[in-house]
Structures are given as structure tokens and as C-alpha cells.
Image (cartoon, rainbow, N blue to C red; front, top):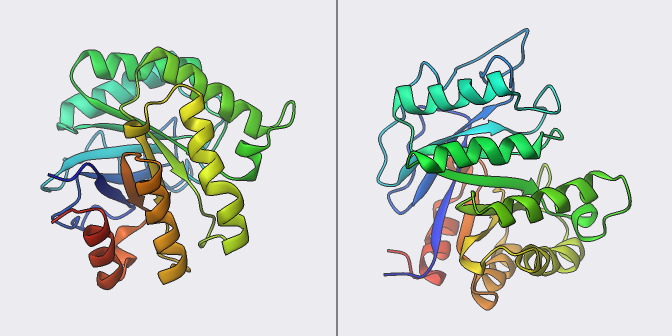
Length: 247
């Protein structure tokens, strides 16, 4: 059995995950108060009324994502809605994708409640220049604090490092940030096996994919996740599976 796992996200609940995925996450639930995808004025699907699609791995839903609103969530009431949605529909757990200045003390409480009742949790965050070079009062400083506090609380099964933007970063940006972000996260108290590196199929090529895989292997972290995995080229998936020993 491989020491590594692979998994990923998609916004479409009708898209099945590859058989080799240990985790598949459906979202993004960006309307945080209404607990739906989309926006408050144009809501989409909700994990509170949708059952997890079948998969070989664990099927989770993602709270947050790019454009999530409002900031400083969850609240007490929202935490209860997250718990109710997860348990009522039988989701394996919740991935918290913090891209809108979430209330991390409440995230810790929510994760703790989920863990206490046997559910899976992960904390996903942007791990680029701002994370590696935080300035006082910056989003990067807030992310560093959240990672340290969540790690100290022991309530996240995985910390997922998003090392991409709308497409893969340039190679100089990748070299400057991916390795340091992994080490910084480990230095914050996250066990290496709980650290997951994440990439996107947009702009993916042999050079940057192999670099990401090199970082997973050389740092002996948990594995690799893929944003919008239905767009991943089958040959790239085969390379990931081969290099991480996942069959």
C-alpha cells in the first residue's frame, strides 16, 4: 500500500472521482449563510439537501472557496447548519476552504464537533508568497495564525496547501514558494503526513507536475490533491499514480 494519497475537488456533483482517489470534495459552498453553492442572490446546490455521490474514497463537501461570502464565518448558528447538513445527508466530512477571512476559532469549534462524531475534516488555504512572507495585518499573517491554532487544536485531519492561482504558477514562483510553504506548515506543528499539496490542471505540464511530485516525495508529506479533477488529463493522472505508487 502506498504511503501517499490523492484526491481532489469538483464543483459538479455529477462528476465521479477516479477510482484511485482517497478523498473527493464537492463544492464550492460559497454562499456561507445560505449553505449553497453560488451566491446569496443566485444560489445553487446545498449539501443539506444533496446526498454524497458514490465513490471508492471518502466523499466530503467543501465549505468556502474563491469568492465565498460573507467574511468572519462560521457563526454559532452557521456551525449548527454545517453539522446538520453533514450528518443528515451522510457526508464523510467537511473541507474548510478559507478564502474569505473565516472565523478560525469557530472553525476549530466546528471541526472539533465533527471529529467528536466521527467525521473527517480538512483545512485548505492559499500557500503562496503572502503565506511564506507574511506582513503585519496581512491575509498571510492571518493564515499563518489559523494554521498554527488549528494544528495545536488537533482538529484537522489534513492541511491542504493551494499552490496555484487561476492556473499553475510560473516555475520561478513554484520554486520560490512550494517547498517553503510545505516546510512552514510542518514548522507550525502539522505532521508531514497531514500536509497535502494541491495543484490545478490549468497550465499543468510535465515540468511543473513532476516538480510538485518531487516535493511530495522528498518532503514525505501526505499526498497530492487536484482542483477540478474532471479537467485532469488521463496521462497526468497516470503519472501521478505511478510516481506516488498508487494503483
